[in-house]
Image (cartoon, rainbow, N blue to C red; front, side, top):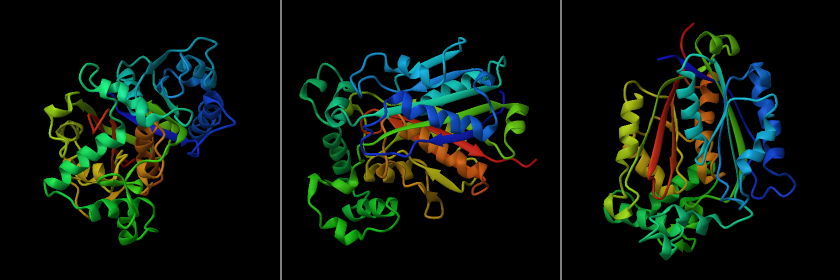
Length: 342
């Protein structure tokens, strides 16, 4: 296997509603920032891959229009996933294993504010038995949270503590618990904000990575797993697919300095902590995570980018990043990033 590293990461400041720029205009400065950070030009990149969903804005082939952000002429090698950008990064990592190119650029974008993502995401459910009932994402997450609480694995105070820490510790747990339910047992602070955003990561292989970055964030392992689509076929209070992906990615092989978890709901962080065997000594979501900013199709890539940025800056030597997709943590990806001695 070829050694592959993240050598640059950039993201647009997340906002509640991007009213003045379309997806291409959101992406262009972020692409430029990422390329400038590692000294690459657009023509130096061997492969481009994106993650997004046309359903968010209701615009067909938006992923094709987004190619204007990287420039499609002269022709480039390009791919697209109707998934979070974390899975696009996985495809880029696989592509670099072929050996004929040394660099890849991964970009993800999501502008969900024009629509109603809470209802829209019901389209990913079982089309015969569940989707016709139109259960929204918060209701399904509340079902998962209730199972966690009823199993005695957490309390509502634990959920509030996650929300308070994600917001920099500025909120008081007792004050959060006094707020009304949005969908019991979840309160508004337990749920992710609607966010528009974009992110870009640049990957490089072998000696090229070392030449582009003094301290690359090497991908020591990466794996993703999926659980049944039918919610009744899995125990929602656990995440075996995360544990399995973590084991295959090597997350348990050595201590880590920090973990970036893609946990859109507060209780999901607790489930993921258990799956990843995290104790209180590991820093979790120093960026704030998806409870602070959750641009759909971007937040998973952002977790990898945030972890990589801390490795590249010297603030961490070994980090684990996690991304999820689907209802109630159905699909999970784990990426282990580390610095190496020269």
